[in-house]
Length: 239
Image (cartoon, helix red, strand yellow):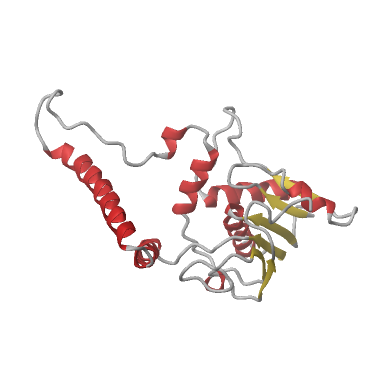
């Protein structure tokens, strides 16, 4: 079977298009996340998702070799699943991702370099607006931190400025929960197998290469196929 993992928002319907182009005797399973309704608590980390989805696919296929594919967000999940399966002595026959970049080795350094690269390409007016916006955000953060150190009664105390939402405060907003999971994902495995990447013809993001950064985490062959005339939303379509 081919196991397809859900999109960023939990949707699996785009995988129906893939089924139309496969042999009739090829079994395909699409896995949805927990938390689509209020009856289940969603997973909040990539590792939790990967471990749970492995238990799900083992109900269908108790042992390998396994075939896994993910689109964008779920590319991270299938990578983690493949690495976990391999670490437990299982074989992964096919690992594929659609338009998915590897997590940066150092998220902080990557963010600084990306912001600097974006800033250097701006016109002078844009640079001024950018600097003002960053200063406003910094002021809010400093105000938030200063609140704990400034004494005063309830009327005079500086009010807390909410900067970031925690997972607990967003309910079952899967898109937000999955975004937080991505930000906090730092792979500890290296996958010793091959990887197939399908991506759009859009320019590769700064500081990445043609493997979209996966050569740091995958030791096998990485095969990249570029799909012309599409974007992230249309790379899997009926046409």
